[in-house]
Length: 233
Image 1 (spheres, helix red, strand yellow):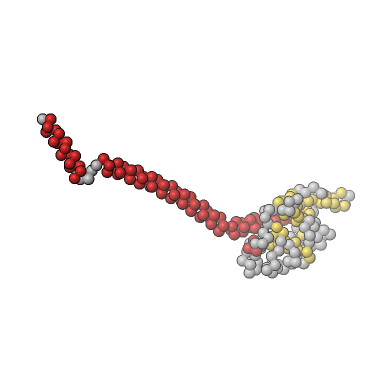
Image 2 (image 1 turned 30 degrees about the vertical axis):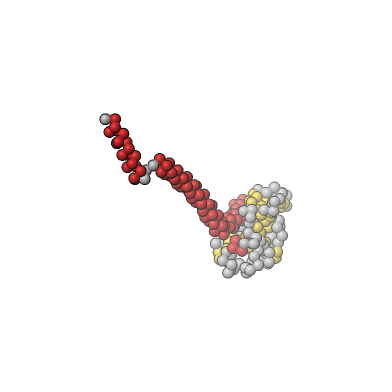
């Protein structure tokens, strides 16, 4: 019985050798499997890094591609801010029967703004209240500026400077007025037509203009984004 068991064991060993199965082979297979798993893990990490890098690259490209759209948005927002300030000044002048002073200036940091002051009357003498009742900051990257490649707006109120009234260049901070009847005048009360040009310096596609008809105080806005001329917004 014992001899029979020994013979079976020897037969199994011989069979394993014939099939090429040895302890050394098993150890080699185990090492190769571990090496493959390590290679697979390392390749997966590289793949993940590549995916993250691609995401960053695509995001950066999208941001660059959206820059012109973002600039246009800021120019349009600044245009709307100027229009709303002027309309508010005119409506207040009419509803309150008061003269409202309007000035286009820059704050201490060089950012554009529209400032509204009231005129008060005492002993039949009109005087300017030095405390503004409204100071409206405009988009900080947008400035009072012209773009030389664009002609005057179809209203033809002048384009010799960023602030042009009656075809005369006005400095920032110059006082203008909305009268109680809604007309837009100079400081002595003479109706004037005017153009306010704004945009982001160095970016002609952001060129915008606001025009004011002195005799009625009508306000219009224009876009020169196509660089071929102005179209009304």
